[in-house]
Image 1 (tube, one colour):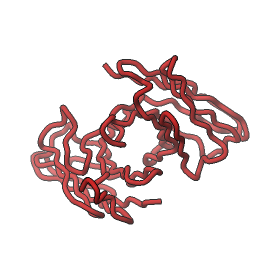
Image 2 (spheres, chains in turn green, blue):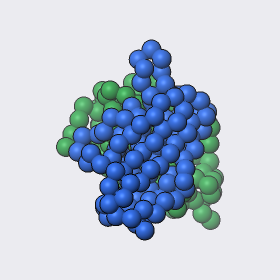
Image 3 (cartoon, chains in turn blue, yellow):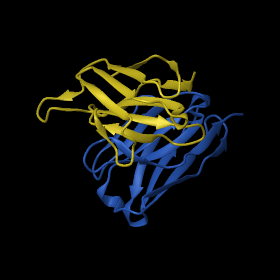
Length: 117
Length: 113
């Protein structure tokens, strides 16, 4: 069974840093591209980052502040978030891309990041 | 970036009736080399992550009831629930995966009338 478990969220002050993790199981992690998607409270979904074996992409809203990475040996996806702003407050989901197309077929349960002084 | 616009923002439908949600992209998401529309639909219930319903604009994900169907091509797409059930109350999102930067519609909240 495919499972994605998000962790690492919490309360951080503006300008601070946080590292999110996503632990994957039930599939060959190294063979799949992965994404981070976030959702502010009561708002819609916002795609923020993608990683394959060789490529990374970022939404303009986080480019230069966030870094996506993966450790295939640990079956884990990461999101290093620096220079955090109030508007980064959201639930962050990791999501797997299907092997046959770039739609997101499995999602983690999400981890809440709150940026506040 | 490709902008996705859904309509309506909210919708109330009686149980057993048809629900229709529209999604329009600011540019075509039809890839001419394979004739596939790079468009997906997701369902999100309160307190849960999104769930994939439809991909390639009209292909139902495994396990999704056949009352859910997707249609459209190019820039205009529709998600239809043929006979609304109580468990279909949720927010529905379209998403394009044509570009390198993926984008979602703003969501449509579906309720029971």
